[in-house]
Image (cartoon, rainbow, N blue to C red; front, side, top):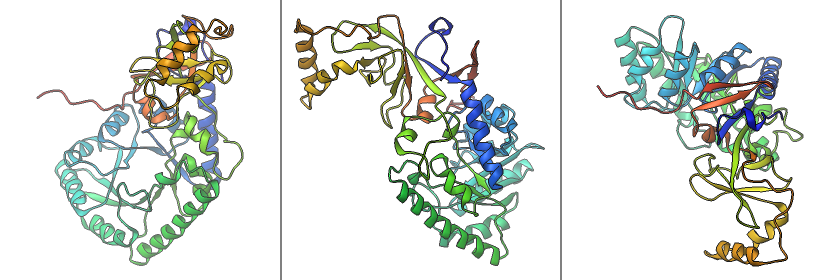
Length: 400
């Protein structure tokens, strides 16, 4: 972990990437894919950054996948030439995707009903381009996708529609990526592989062999690469990692081959209590849909971060965690416990606690939505910070 000095930070909260670790993570995943004979189509929803996307492609990935039309537009504008949208496209989206499919650029989208195929077909014909259509499978996530027995009919519809090309199958098992039970994660993934292999055989026998079988993820990558059925891997979080992946453990056990590369710099802005200091990183600096952010530098080992509002969070020293425990479930318990600690003359704020003006470094609980809260990644190479725009975030079009 190589973090910049406080003097190099233009402001806080700031999203910072360790360039050396990032490069190692990218190289490790590419090497794993190459060894397995599986193409890497890295998932751009993790970082929403075309500069990072170009780096991943330059290191060997076939292209990127993403979840929104806006992400696809940002990646093509940023120089990515092969993009797959991995969620069904809203009705307004096909013309915008067709506009991206210029010579030398491959654009695909997943579908789970014939109406989506028709809209993509109409847009492609109107723009005189070809779009790839990939059948999205539901193998347990139940977010989108068809059940396997419904896939052949959609593949036939895609094959027959003008302006589009049957591009294959997508099988993303998002519900397995963070399972704490490693054995269950593996057995459930392998059961899905058996279903997927049977479907590939069915389509092949029907004269529609899938050109691509794409899916998988960081949390199951070991199993996915060994499955013998995937031709592409859609992992994304491996590039930067987060606390949530640490908590669930690497697929197959042992240590993760990927290292933490993503951090949030925060500044202590108040130290008025004996139980905690307050920093400038709250709900708007850190996604809360996963585990809390971890304190990794700038405070004593074992310190905790917890949000205290939109723009502020607490840093609690390990020697003061009894105050948080004393708060219990009483709605006013925190108020009472902190007031009691402040009034206790025998209690002193630990000497090694962070002070006002000092930087405390946090590691996000969930990388994808945390990155979406920022307009840029600040990439530290050991000497300088380079700003990489998070240009794939959702933006509304200009008024006509």
